Amino acid sequence: MANINLRPWREELRKDKQNRFIALLIGAAIVAAGLSFLWKTDLDNRIAYQQSRNAYIQTASRQLDSQIQEIENLRRQRAELLARMEVIQDLQGKRPVIVRVFDELVRTLPDGLFYSDLRKTGELVTVVGMAESNSRISTLMRNFERSDWFQSPNLTNVSAADDRRAGYSQFNLSVTQTTPEVEEGDEQ
Image (cartoon, rainbow, N blue to C red; front, side, top):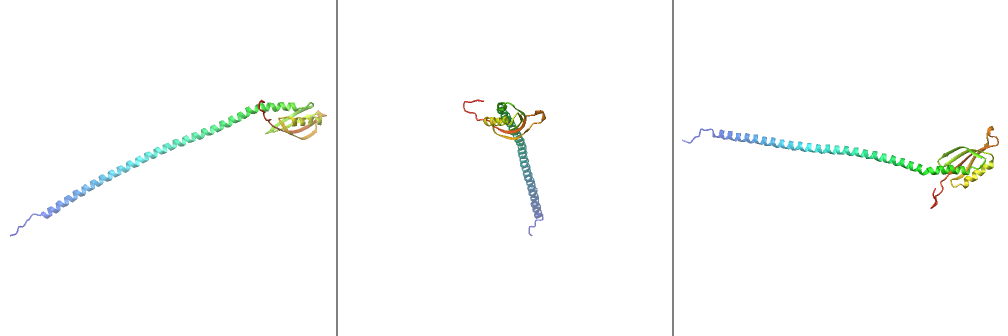
């Protein structure tokens, strides 16, 4: 008779192969889950690192913006201070000039003539005054012409004075104020 094995070895072999397949499948799933967890963790760490770098850059950018604003404020204040200093220096430099102009106005004034109003607009000095005669007005204009501090006298109006100043003539005159050149060795 033939040797018949009644044991279900094929089924056991199939069951054994199936168990190994399931174990390999579970192992592969565990390894895949582990790798995906590691990949996700690494990705989260990289995102967190980049976000921290972005936050640092934004903070540094805000600090630089505030420093730039502060620098602009300081530049504006510096410009204002320089403008003030320039005005003060200009006024300090012109202070003796004003005194010299008034002194020259008195020196050019002939007898029998007086000023009733003086106005200065830029470099133009407008004079309103009273004179005993028209020849005194002519003398005043010649004095202005000879002066180093004035030039181009222009008589705009001569009229008889009101009743209180009978015999006087009222005049309007404009003259350009100049600053004479300082010669070497000559001080003002």
